[in-house]
Image (cartoon, rainbow, N blue to C red; front, side, top):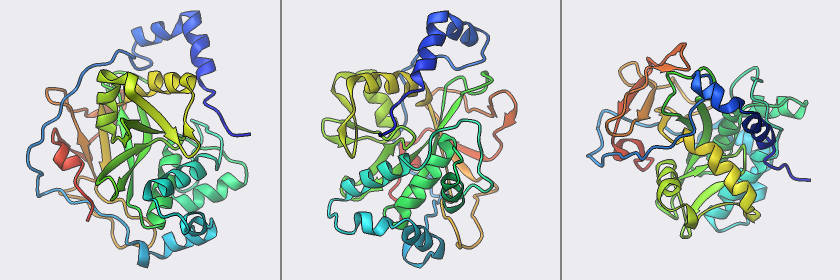
Length: 294
């Protein structure tokens, strides 16, 4: 039997008991209040460079592809978007979610090996495995961090991790959440993370969530949207998304990430009260964040 979105049972019980508003009041958990956000389309900053794995010559990705027969799952499929959904579905089914468990090493082969032994992992690991698996079959993907607008103030639950994949068919980045096996689509076009937030705010009636099996149920749609929307405020990615045997990982002037910040909003410098964010550039420009991979 396929996994279903079940964590909402706990959330509903919390809301019914009145404890969710209390925790939000004392800044333990994030606010669910949504806010309209905007970004600029200024010219991309030439200082920023992104690095992606060379699929053909990357021994690590070849091992991943062959060990889990990812090529045989997708070789006979001509449609790129269908390949993306196949890999998303496969990654979603590799383990049950556990928000407090870390792998011994944060790479796809280690995560999958430990999952086979019965371990369960976080959203982070879903993002890593899905992105690596897509890269292994020649489709560029990256791990995407999404954070709430009160990321500095709350103590828990201020971040979530997903994947974004670059589709040459649609000529754009596409948001995908492998923990829940969903891709947002509006009027037949898959959305990136920023477009997803905009659709939730402005056009929810026409928004859909899909996966390899088709459109998710109305119940699962509402549950997921009500949960994920608060995270679609700050967005960050590593400049260097390479894995395995690639040479020295790159940073830019000592910074390893770039964070997309809505116009007029504060640049977050602390994560959940205690962890400094001193490794990221900040930008308001969609052209910095969503440039076509080379």
